[in-house]
Image (cartoon, rainbow, N blue to C red; front, side, top):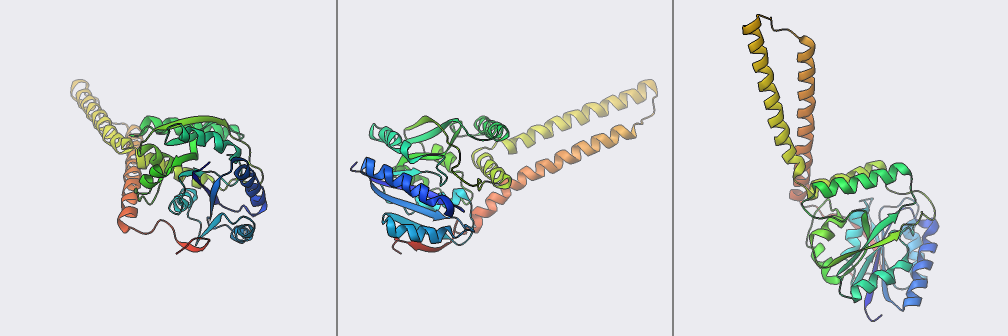
Length: 310
């Protein structure tokens, strides 16, 4: 292939199996005759992963290493890597070989044939039933709420032409949801189904807290529905309160029934108080994101690099 290939890999506590990752990538590089740059971003690992990257860079000179000053999260790590890539075709894969490098030639072939983006669509996942149900539900909820058509069951595993990455990087969001940004910028995109492998070793760095943050970033960054739902709930609540008030007044004057019902009143107050707190929480999520953008902090801090010019 005469195109320069960039592969972005976020690294988090991957020291034990990084050799496997590099062997798989290098085997495919030789087989496909890639002019390759491999950008490994250490996202605040606790297991000396960056030292392993330094060691491997002597064996594989096409490695470019980036060490972030702390754990900024998967999406930020990938975005940082994208800002340093120089290839004509850019791929994003995970460090655990769940998205194997041997699939990349197939994905690159779609770019050769006119597509600008080829993204992976997970046909099967080697994960627990609860996780599979959670992921499936999230993608469908996001699709129904989003103002942008985000593909179902697609992750960050993809290959893109340079022009797509350049336009993605123009969106300087502090809480990026990359698969949503990838869909938002447009261009000719195609989904490629594949079976996602199990992790080769270790546990996912995605804790429940991190998964929830990504889900919230996806929904609040690409949908205005939650904020509009508050208005709808307010109208419904007002209608209910008005109808109930009329009912009580009519009952009092027509039947002489004294206005009672402490339990009913307590339930109504509790219900609407909870609803108010939920609405304030939704508003707060949008305000926090506005605050993050207004502060204009850099989305990551780089501590050191390997084979990258200043």
